[in-house]
Structure formats: structure tokens, C-alpha cells
Image 1 (tube, rainbow, N blue to C red):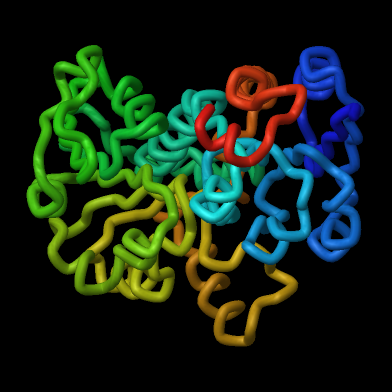
Image 2: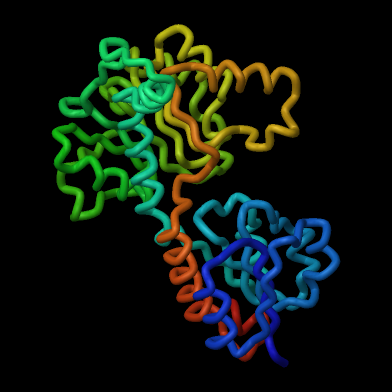
Length: 327
């Protein structure tokens, strides 16, 4: 039987063409598919490639009785019941290697914008207003940068710090040692990150363990005036507590690419008021979940995912038991 593969979000043609050629299958590329539509058709497919709008929970996985793989564009696996899928012999693959550099560059760019007041200054000059003293910046040199999570993006962010005259600390609960190419990164614990860092950048997956780890209590243990960067997942941070800390001065600034709720049309009255306050602050830089969203990463993610799917999934199809032995 010729395998059928569904791609539900924008991808580079490398992935579409590569899957069709290497798996000798029919690839359907339909970005209009949502969860409701997918429930009706998923049983027709042997593989699916998704992004954040599609949720592959147990019920949806069960509907996909022919599934042999689920591919995730990007990194976050919270949208897939990975353990359940694998228990059914379904390969699950993501592609954080494809956009790790893009995320790191974005986080670094947001930080420089904040420290040098680039957004405010740009807006003022466009209105023919020069205020040099008000827009006096702060140098990165001499600061201590703490990184929580030294995986793909955390390591890439650390690389960007090399040569800028900063001290780099990192904490990763699940790494006994750090990569050899990062000898300048000091391995430490979470308490030291909070106590010693002028800037703290989060590079974590969203799990039960990381959900809302940044609260008012956590922030209160940080050096007063530190800057928080989050380009990982919004619900790692309790937004209302960050807002309170910015108002009080406990936080000196924030660079946020991700949020608890990224759908403004669904905001409650309280959420709308909270986000309006947050977005009005001059010491906050915000972007719409586009860290890692570059032309280069579009291609990189496709290349990584194509390689993982083709090397990790057996074609022609084998039975579930054989598949589990293969994995």
C-alpha cells in the first residue's frame, strides 16, 4: 500500500518533496486542516507532520489507526502524547536542531534592543524627536547572564554570549556535564542563577515540572533589577507576577516572545487589561512567538525532520510489535 502523509502547517518544499521521494508516498499539504477536520480524516494517513495548532492527544492518536509517525515542526512536544504514541509503535520526531540558532539570535536581539532602548528611540526619531539622554543605554559587557535549560536553544544562546565580556552561568537539571565547546559556561544551580544573574534566559520545554516555575516567589529570590528573557513557552511564566515585579522594580525588564495566552481574540477582560499594562511598559520588548521563525530555520527544520522521519520509520510498514523492536 502506498503510504499517505499529511502536512498540516507551512513547511519548506524540501520536506514535501523529500517525503514523497524517499518514502515513495503520497504527500498531502493542507494548512487549512484543524483539529476538528483532522478527527474526520486522520484514519486515512500513515504519517502526519504538525505544528502547534494540532494537538495529538490519545483520542486523536487512536483515530489514526494507520499512523506510523508523527513529525513535529520545531521543538515543543507538549502537543503530543509522546509516550502513548510510542507505546502504539508510532515514531515521534521533532526538529529543535533546525531553529536553535534562530531562537538564540532572536533572544540576543531582544536583549540588545532592551538594553539600548532601540525600540523607543526608533519610535521617537520617526516622530522627529531627539532625546539622547532619555535613551542612554546599558552595556552588556560586565554583566552576568544566567541560562536555565542548556539544550539545543540554551546552548546556542550561550554561544552568542561568547566574546561579549559577560559571565555565563547555566543550570540544567538533566545534564551532568555541559558541551565541550562551551568551556566558558559555569555549571551551577538554580539558586545561584537567581542570586547572581543580571539577566536570566529560559530555554525549557513545557511540562508538568516547568509549568509556572516563574512566580512572584521565584522572582523575589532573584537579584533586584534583573532582566528576564523567555523564548521557550509562555506558561513557564506567570504573567501577572512578572507584571507586578516590573511595576515594583524587582524585575528591571523583560523580553518576551511567548505568553500564557497567544490568542488576543480569546482574552478575558482581566487578561486584556493585564496584557495592555504589560505591553505599555518601556522596559518590555515583546514579539509574537517568532523566535526561531526565519527563512533559514524554515529550511533547517524541514531538513532535520526529513532525516529523522526517513531514518526512524520503517517503510514498507511493519507490524506494531516489529516496529517497537526497531525503535
